[in-house]
Length: 81
Image 1 (cartoon, one colour):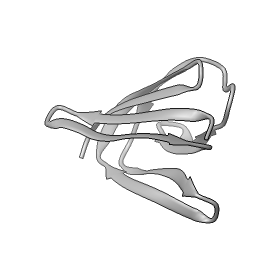
Image 2: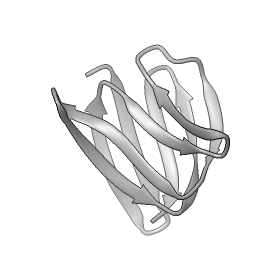
Image 3: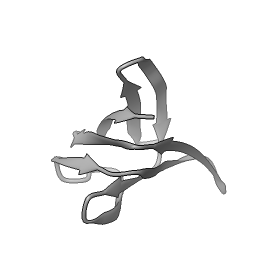
């Protein structure tokens, strides 16, 4: 697992986990963050954050909106659920 994923909301921490990829619902469409992704900040729209749990299995967190920061294999999503 090469990416550290944190999903937080105003109510508290939802998830803190290492993963190999994160798929996010961006304003301009879904996008995937893999190891060594370029730094970015993006708004998120209603949809699902999907992340790898183990080979062939995914975890899913449904969201209404939010934003995400990607930097140095660390993904932090602040969301409304």
